[in-house]
Length: 488
Length: 96
Image (cartoon, rainbow over all chains, first blue to last red; front, side):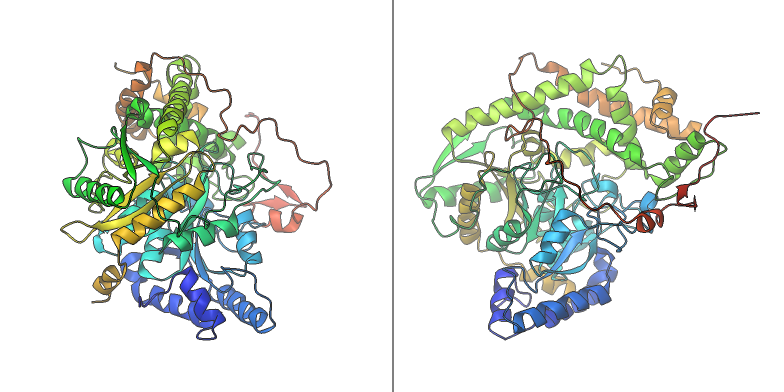
């Protein structure tokens, strides 16, 4: 048995009386204490708050109050989700010391579900990046090889789950920021259908793309965590109020008779051979398990990255206009209010955030709007059309999550475009608003995890989890080796 | 296609007080990124998608109910400078 239980396993032990919420939390904190110096997954750990919540979870269970699958489970939160009275920085200097006066909806839901927040995890500043090296508080390193990146932007959440300093974590995914770090750290990362998890209290990066989702050790844990956080929220105008899928219903159904599409455009140049072979092997195993494999072409994917790097920065430039040094956050000096704002922003934002604000401002500015932003929106529509055509033929689409395994720290920091290419497989699902998830299917010859992506149509979480559960069974991936490696 | 960028103008629009050197660096990087981004112009189809929200949500209104507001003292506690419940800022207009 793995030394670190998952959500489902910890829940069983808790209800069987083999452990307590306080002991689960102490286990997570003990691992954090042992590995943080090498990994740096967390920005804030508030022991007192966590222990108090865990104590309450135990008292509730003793009184016969069971709040559901997350009751007593230690969970880490990406530090771009507001926690009332607990420092929330989005890994930016401009929010150093900021204590929000309210909880994000997902934080409130975790609380109602009895979950215990271990701490706030590291990220690329304002979730802009693919390696967690853009954090103003220093990078997160990969538990499988600490000279390599954890991926990003939810690198802290992915590393915390991989190392066992949290049983599960929440991340946010704007262009792959849950799935890519999950892939690089060998855990399960899932981005739900746009509009199903409330963004209230999530520090906004690109509002039409951002979604919160779970990072976990197993596919079942992912479904359990998702069910605890999603659902309609009147505080988010884009929140879906209709009928939600049942992600757990297909977990044990098998995949016989399903049609799985392999995306032609997400392979070839730039993809590491070890990644391609691990993906190919899994596709063959799925075929043996009774799936019909269909190669599908979605030509617009070739220009999805270009569209993303116009749309996301455009939205970021508008969203980040609120950081001005007046009402909260870092304040610079200036003789006038405007000069003070411009100085506060120049001092408070790191280079990648500044770059994206400039890029977005340019793409939206007079004279360039149609050629860049307007055209990017047309590409977005073309991607939705291509997806819709593909889903007439297949139930889900599959691809690598990332063209490469975890890369060396520092290898891409000087070349923004090379860094952006990390997200080439994950971006289309954000632009379309569709659900997608990554799960580990094996290791390359250096012992680094390879992630397999499953994409589904809007509200297609049921069939997506059905396929992911089978992929997990077929892969038989064991997280423990990574943990042993760091321990030695 | 080389992209023309008046970087000082863009920085001014974005309210970012950057040095000449910083502006030059960002201008070069933006040029490279925008050259890549200009590939969006290769799409010649006119796709028809009726709604940007994947679930077709459109003009969402909440019920007009009064809810408790955030606590003023708690909100003001985050501000760099306050006086008597107000945010303190330097002059808005430049003067002599």
